[in-house]
Amino acid sequence: MAAWYDQAIIYQVYPKSFKDSNGDGIGDLTGITEKLDYFTQLGVNTLWLNPIFRSPQVDNGYDVSDFYAIDPQLGTLADFKALIEAAHRRGLRIVLDMVLNHTSDQHPWFQGALQGPKNPYYNYYIWAHGADGQLPNNWGSFFGGSVWAQHPTVADRYYFHLFERRMPDLNWHNPQVRQEMTKVANYWADLGIDGLRLDAFIHLAKADLHQNYPSDGADPVVAEGMFANLPAVQPYLAEFVAGVKANHPDLFILGEAASATVNLAADYTRPAANMADAVISFRYFPTKPRAKRDAVPADYQPQRLDWLAFRQVMTDWQQTLLPPRRLTLYWGNHDMARVATRMGSHRYPQQSAKSLATLMYLQRGLPVLYYGDELGLSNGTLASLAAFGDPTVTAFANAAKAAGWSSERILENVNATHKLTARAPLPWSDDIGHGFSKVAPWLAVSQDGTPVSKQMADPDSVWHHYQQLFALKQTPLFTRGNWQLQNWAPWLYAYTRTLGVETALVVVNISDTRHTVTVPRAWAQAPVQQLTVGAVHQTAAELTLGPWSSAVLTIKKGSK
Ligand code: NOJ
Ligand code: CA
Image 1 (cartoon, rainbow, N blue to C red):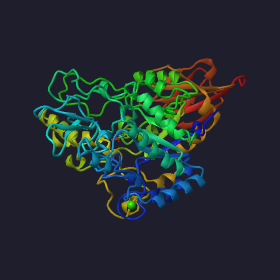
Image 2 (cartoon, rainbow, N blue to C red):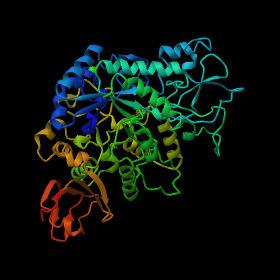
Image 3 (tube, rainbow, N blue to C red):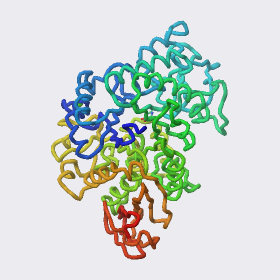
């Protein structure tokens, strides 16, 4: 049976950067409520909000200190209820971001756990002993350094953190932890939310901690084999989801599965297994290998998408996650540079923004749009490396300096690749503070880009392209139709969608150059051409596309 979320078009709201309603420079829940008509005008029907729970904001809300409270910076429970009510009145669904793998070190559970093994919360976290100042093992954290942090007062006692050191991992082996987290999810589901985005769920299980991961150096190593996608994740996830869906069978479970391969994604979305209804993997964007002689680490250097590998990845995912499984379709999120910066053309920014959108979102799957991408925004800029407050940036800068890079070049590279510069306040207008806030925003980032007000008034804007694209996406051909890649030329990304007698061909020139391709007879001068971007010219045997041009051609069997 089809679920409501089979029709979902998801807009990811980064609450702190969306709209400030009370003039403190921080976006908030009331700001979102004020702008609800914006979403219906654009044509999305589901909002995913990055975490809104009480948090010291070490990791912008992914460090939760109270799962039952709204962060005061973002508003109150009353504001949240008002948002849900107003959203539902407009037919908009709300998906909350739920952090399962860790808490803030300020969470009362962790504060209790610090008291020692006799405290009932000690086993809510993961502890190990080091010997004589040695760390328990050599595993590395995603945020740099070791996964182990020393207990503040007890020698040789360490707690485990995969992310920032102030974000200790929960011990999912402990049934009480699993029950508590199910209780949290039910609390919010009872308040009427429509779905949960499960943060980092693939890390819930860890291997035996008493072993090093093979490595050729002394530095900690990010040992994904020890803490990502282990088989025990699946029963943990299934127990959690069953515990929430028992009372809320329509709740949409969107899992963040950053390093999941396509086959793992198929496992996590096994029909009727009470796991995820869809997952978001970060494996969609293979990049070209870098030159071997480059001594500077890759992390903050722009990488070029390998288009052939990308076509192969899309084909693998489309053909493996066949219905009733679902795919997600996205170009970016708060953890990566914006699509316009990573993938867009400098010569054709408008056309590439539109054509990239067509390319991605008319495929089979659920669109997930990162706020601001509907304006074609690129990464903003921070004025200094220090403003990133990120030790991995410092490490990169040191290596780049040693290799002779100038400070300007280092900063430019970090601005173009960092996740923080993709989290700038949304420009609503040309008014003071871009219509986002009357005061300086929480993040001192400068952001170019045409604001919402201007784009909504311009029928040729990127915004209007998205509006038309989403209207088309809602039709049965583009929600349910079969997908097949058409590998006709390296400069062309083309695929067909077929449902019954109707077939659409989506063609996108992914280059800065005009090109012509010979097309199969069926496509010669296809009668319907929609959503055209740039110059698209059809003849009896050929299709010519200008730089970053694209179109949707449709034929019905028997129409020729
Ligand atoms: C994934 C989130 O998307 C990211 O922003 C966060 O830092 C980590 N999980 C830790 O919660
Ligand atoms: Ca505010």
